[in-house]
Length: 214
Image: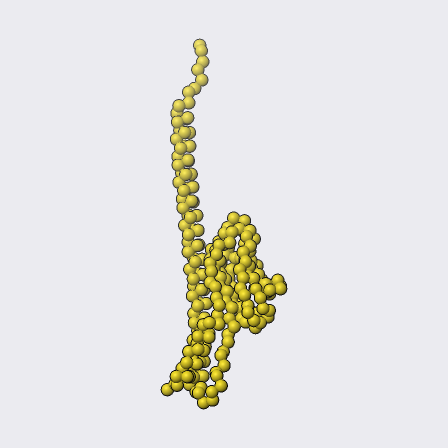
């Protein structure tokens, strides 16, 4: 049996895990030749920054990106990336920028799904009351952290399948549009060819020969 103090400390530990993560999951469209930036504040050095993105639709599903620290130094970048999942350590306090650039496309708009998480990962120390925290409480705490890790893995898996679903839907929609216009052009070609043949036949049978006076 856990004491009320032990249970309270365990619940506080679990809540500290939830409170320590500041996340923003967004979906945005990036026009051709557009550069779009988002920002996240880091309160203290050593915090973990989770950065995930995936191109949902547009062109070849690729995008250029870069991550800069408060000193405007590039700490992570990539070109023509389809998706990425990174964990960075913030060595400086301040505002970090996460920028996407659709420079390789002149006509195609890109739809980006991304997630920025700032996580301090604290483990609150138990108050100095000897004999109050049991070994079972520590084991329960570890189980909570393991559950949190498993939930994060499930979240990443959901993002992966969501990205595959979105890309598959975009491909099907694009293929359907191409087939439609191909069928329209094919029908127009058949109608045009039939009209041309009718015109040729009418011209052939209605053509009069030359007349000569005797």
